[in-house]
Length: 391
Image 1 (tube, rainbow, N blue to C red):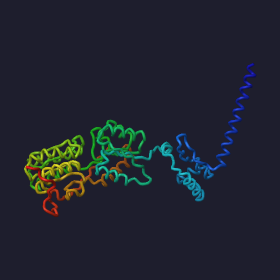
Image 2: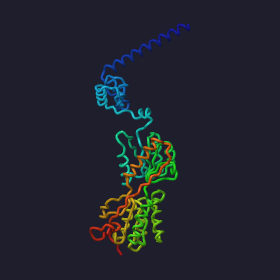
Image 3: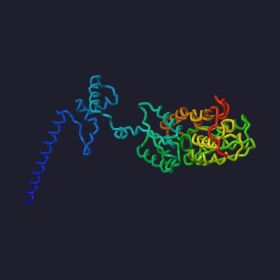
């Protein structure tokens, strides 16, 4: 009885095996003789072409295709042309995930900036991207919006993607030290306590620039009243700019006049207006960034004050030509091209040797004197940027 059952099982197995061999043989004949057609997936999308598809289309081995695509030697010009023709016809683009598994490289560099709408951060992003050649990693951009949780999300994504490098203008996400320990990273423009001493930094000389601009108002223009309109003091570069302002005012024996903690031009305008209206012109203004500059300008306009007769204004951050007012700002400008170049240099060196000690690079700001402090004469009479309020 048991022998008969075993025999029936053997017969059934051989039948199934024979049918499977027939099916495989038919598939091989079709794949070798028929022109390959795009394969649709269940979602209706065409499956991307693979190396085996290129090899079948060109009538060569997968190894030959690999040698051509990797530009290896020992491939004839005729064979290379034949393979590349198939690559073009099948729209082959490769598989980055598979390449990453082989090379241990993702082909991406992550950049996290605080606000893509801010002109300075946009210029910095462009300067970094310009330094990525066609053979370099691709730039992935994350906008933290100055929020730790948002920065945390991007850090998690970039770590999951195994990016080859990170450039971060930090908001203070908790996992930033972990990212620094895993991925070559450069901290740019501002810093947070958690990565000081463990990450490479490229920082602007903010305190020195602030001292230069405030000193210019006090010493060159002889002002005894200089107001600071400052942003969020939790940001390290804003604190450094306020430190420079305070140092100059104390050295000159002058009272500090400060409105700070502002995050938007509207906030800055409200704080500046409340302070400006208590002062008797002429007085000076130093703002910590372009948003604070426009807030201060709005307050000046509301009070109907003249620039530079009543108010002399200086700022840090590139404002460019203030075309609305016709003014040319006196400003300290962070040289984004230099910052980008040094950041990419440190990133490359860290990638080549992860054991290097943490390095700190300081970049001086460029000082530009314009009409807002009176050093460059206005083409017309002193400008009234607003209408005086009714008395």
